[in-house]
Length: 318
Image (tube, rainbow, N blue to C red):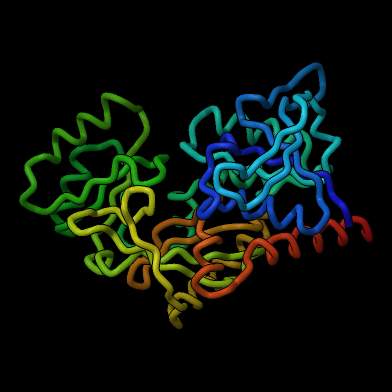
């Protein structure tokens, strides 16, 4: 099966070849004989009944400083592709949402991964609300009074933007912290969106576990340990990845949410678990597969493509 694959992603020339999951997915596609075309989200358009993108054919290689070669620029109808990867990084803003609406117009005739409808309707910090018994105490609101009452009840809390990403705007507020009112005012001045507050989990200092699921099945995990004095474990703000396995509790979490992810067409996801509590379900542009491959030898990119090719074959037989 030779496929024509479009990567809707951030500029490929700027990615980290040792850490970027989309780069690894692209390398695996080439190893299977698939052709790659790359475009950025701002080059996606609707034009007189067609959804088109302006981009370039690419060839990838794991060679620092020379990891991509480009063909000529072209504007292509997305119906020409067999698979489109929705892989640009958040923030999950109106531009992101608009792109999912455009991709809805070509999926499933052209297979979009992850399903754009459910990406739009399952943002990272909201899909977890379907599983309240698996998550730490959580509040989503714009009400300063409710946030203060939440802190009075739970003591240490984490407050962060509801649609943020990459650890940006995350605050750890202790009971004696006098900055709560100022922080709420700052959030309110820059956005009309609610914030999310969660009970602080002290075990985060030992790590925030990223578990990779493919078509609803867990394939492995990495632990992300915050830098000393840092509340965030995200690797691009200093978090350290380390090898780790799955606990019985984490397998129970995966067994609960896996069928839901599979039903929604969320083929490649990464969930975040701290001390046995589910905090996020990452569906927009999950990461971590290169670290998993280095630590455990799990070729998640191959498993992802096995799942994609299996689903395409099933559609052809239907």
